[in-house]
Image (cartoon, rainbow, N blue to C red; front, side, top):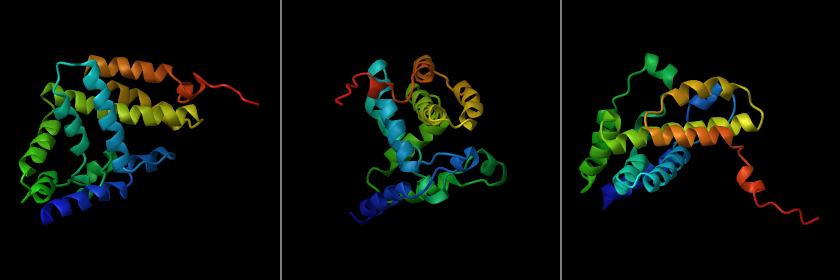
Length: 185
């Protein structure tokens, strides 16, 4: 149980580590844990639209895809030009001694390989989470997301993700709120 407690504290650390790309964007902020929640929720939605995929595998893959960042940090594109993280060692050290460690490691490896239907959807859920954040910032008046959105949109691989992204881009961040808004004054 000690290894499980350590894993839980390690996963909790993701709440404290900010996503580093927002520094370059100049606005917004998000922890790795917030990003993982968004990615996982998007994966849930995708699993409901694409019933042929293994929903539990997809959702779990998204939940753990950034777990190594508790040890290596969130390296953005600029960082990766200069720093090479040993993610495999981080995964090994995190999962060693866990009765289900090979399951976590396998999901992270599959995500990184990107060959299975679930890994492709997980990759796209990861990108959709960023698209959602960028669209939100654009909607509240920040200009830099408009430059970032096209390349991120081009990263999408699956048709369902492309359709979701099109809908995100056509929807204002607060449409859901004003959809049933009633002024009581």
